[in-house]
Image (cartoon, rainbow, N blue to C red; front, side, top):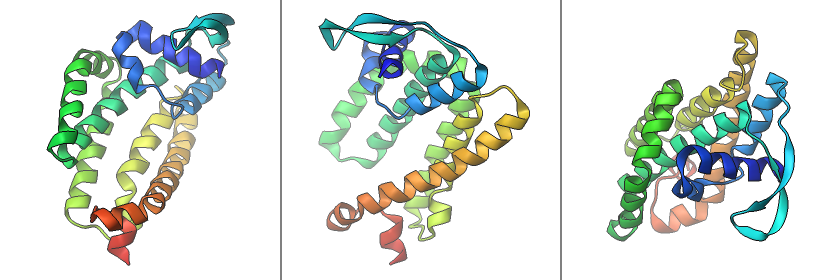
Length: 203
């Protein structure tokens, strides 16, 4: 919980209040892995949270891991909104378009800090769209953009080349598993709404 609250604070400090709407638990693992490998120990102290200003909660101070997680959250959020804009109907495009306008400056700043991540996330989004448009029915192929994206993100948790190779492989496998689980969870909904789902294509 202290890492999650620390990530919320780091997002606000780096990218402003609006960026906090991207906050979720997904990148807590990245912050923990990066700080664990760096050996960096950040101070944890009780602070008031913007979501509940009446109660003090333990908040982790700035660190290498929180910086990486905050930058990645902005980049991932940006490309998720871009994907929503391409796939959604007119009514759903309105909030996505507004959010993109509000986050334009934050994305530009995050991309300048992490150009390699930005390029990988952009390419993964493009590759995923192409696979879905082609009706890909091969789970390994359909999951490859997600696998490469998470592999690249995990490898950024270390500056040691040997550790980076191991982390990339770990991220690749984890990315595939997450993709399969998401596709399995959405199977019934995608079937009803006639949306793309690799398991529907393979059936």
